[in-house]
Image (cartoon, rainbow, N blue to C red; front, side, top):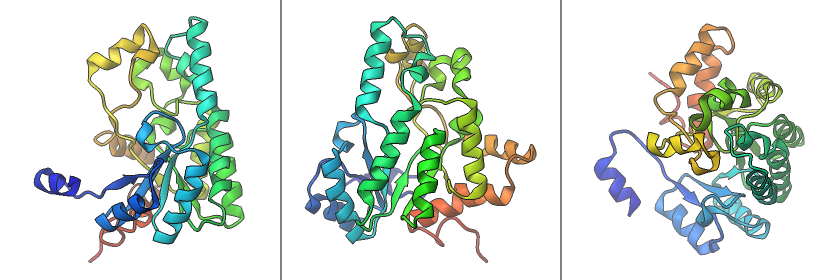
Length: 273
């Protein structure tokens, strides 16, 4: 049904990613038969229909391993995230940078390692989305060094801004996971350079100004996400000009590798004669 709607309106090529929450194996197989190119699971309850417990994830990984389709993961520890937010509000910390300080990197690092362990032996291609934390990158590197089928991505948000930008950009820089420290950003750039992180994604999730502005008074009243589709490439090309990344590597992580991950290559991701 969604393909029919998209076909009638889409001005660009597209592919669909299915939700792998707490759903049956039959539902996953049905979506695969319908043409989805991958599945996504959230380890936090931001989108409840896409959230899965550890037991459900394990079962889903086995099915997706059989189907040969990757599972994209939003890796954060729900308990740590929830507790941090409660502590922030209780202490009166609702200023923008509280979103970073009370949603620590360990929440991402632990969840990344946990999902890597759960995926072992299931045959699934695990893909960790929008990585931000040095510890999570180290967990990914550890898994890859042992031959695990796991890849990782980050976005320009985390390569170009740190938590210090929350002080000036406020709710407009609020993303999930949140912006991190300079040392985390340095680890991401190093991981792109050495191949540990192989995909760059825009993480495009814009909201109206009226909704974002609420975050100046209470950061938790503003939704997380921002513009990415039209800004990511120009911003990253600026980093090419600065010598931070080569043009060839940018093409690889922003075009070629995503197409390979979703099995759209060589129809997508490369210009061929």
